[in-house]
Image (cartoon, rainbow over all chains, first blue to last red; front, side, top):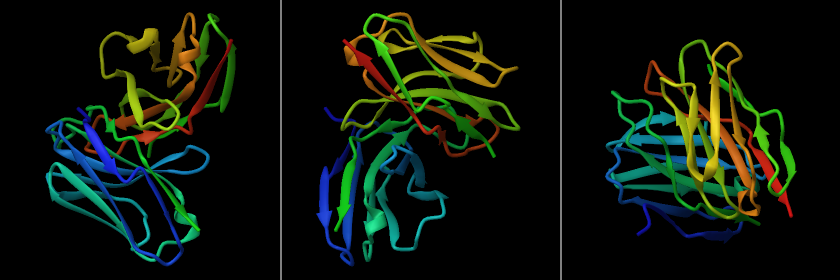
Length: 116
Length: 114
């Protein structure tokens, strides 16, 4: 029973297109995240939502827009895709809240986005 | 702001040999420390974490790490590695004093040689 699942696993698209990645967690966690992993394996946080409220919004182009319909789901929509957007995008969740800051992250298996 | 350094980008080691993966951090406040492992084509999994208390922390798959506050280090060790330990290892920190993001180090690629 997958804890954090994201779809699709692979996404190949052309420059200028718009695409979405979906994420769902069944752990009952309050907080969800999007991370970007580049070709050198470097991980950078993009967004964090706590109970559907945007908590962290790193310096990410406006073309990236997260949406959290409920606390179990966090989707990522990307407009006008560029070559530099090619990366692996990871969804994660944790029991992090404003009272506890030490909950580990649970990651999905990633979505490999290739922009041609 | 806090930061994490993993000095070794690649560590090759023979099977059944011991290994140490180094992690140093900088932060103006106390931190929580984590090690995560990423197997090929998978997401990251928690290996172990240091929150408080004993500075020697034991994790899954026979790994352990020691928190050294004076040296701001959190090195990961395993006395005898297996082929299945071949993976990318990430050290991570988060601040104790506020709700904040987890900062990851650049990762160390461990290759176990048969």
